[in-house]
Image (cartoon, rainbow, N blue to C red; front, side, top):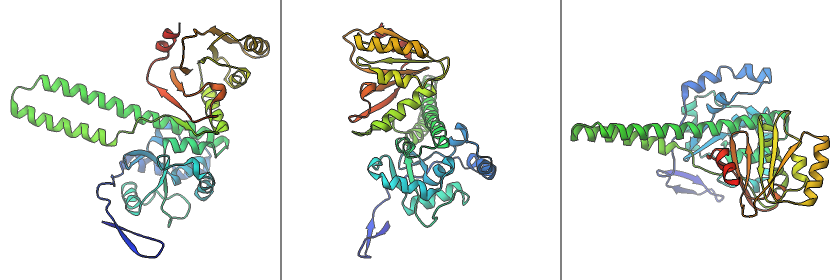
Length: 338
């Protein structure tokens, strides 16, 4: 049983035996990374995706990063970063950010060691940010380092999710193979128990499949910035499938890197074709393909990734909408459009 102190100084017993979940961390990998922290801070370089993965922990069944680690990566003070968050607290619901309890914090220090205390007021309990919370935080920290770091953080989260999903598939296949090779009941029961324990451990610590980003009504700039970052990240191609496109979308596509092709599947619109012709006389060409009238959903393809858009790109952020990364290959979507 734990206790918490209310405003009138009384103590209220809180039952938390079923709520607290141990932090999952790879201590050896983390300690190996910590030895290079001083060199990192002095060099001004950015941590790679592999190093950032070592800072992702599991608390309350969610993959999160601690505010002090985020401030360390963004090259800002913890107090400065948390002040920005508190000024925009309406953007950070509990599934985006939460404050650790004393028990959770003590367990976190136990797993990581005393070296995991980066700046700020150590007397205050730290905050944990989920993947969605970090995405929202990137809209508040507009420095070049923060933007580049956030791209690596998003890749680290995606890498961890893919790793867990791939590992689960391997164990499921091993489960089927071993079950077919069982020769007697006793061995089958022992094998079943072992496999069940492994699958339960993976399931317990697997991240929840959530949208990459959710934008509340009116967050036009945040949504526009998020999509712009996706456009800038393209290395081979950008394909937009959207019934309604205007010159604002053409303006966004000018942010793509040299050599990246761009194609827009949309419905015929005379004004859009005029704007597209003017655009193509000055900037790298954007190809236009007539979209069948029966198409409904909107998709954005960045290289080999497919994103489902909750609103037309020109209206992104005007109303509550989400941008979700899908597991389907781009060619499957493009084949359906054609």
